[in-house]
Length: 149
Image (tube, rainbow, N blue to C red; front, side):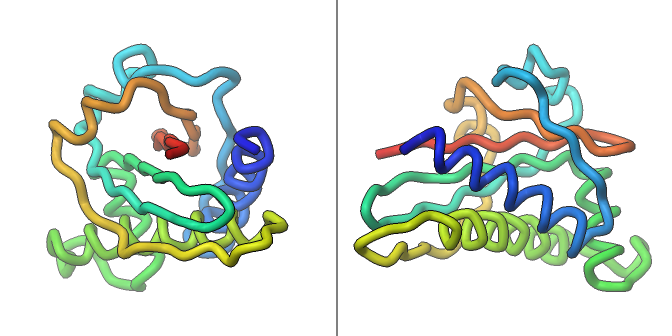
């Protein structure tokens, strides 16, 4: 099931990033830690979204501030001077909500999937997660993790 969910997640990320944020993406070959990828130096903002259904789990998405500002500008049509932390957090959580919802809708299930409300997480929450799929963008990178319960 994990392979099916991972494939659906990658397809969803590609679709959401291209359609909503006009950002092409490529995926890293193998999962990596934040230190291995160099993402720990980019001071990413993170959020998590738990889901339930035929199986349950949690998606975690990390986006560096600089990339998140660009995404928020594209998404909201506002210049960065008009954006505050609440705008960035909103873009981050909505991005994960779209990715997760789209990915889970691609999976055949007997019991419908339910999504919790995405939550912004702090540094200690981020550092507990070991391995991430790295998502390369033209100017930066993001990271995502799926943890099955």
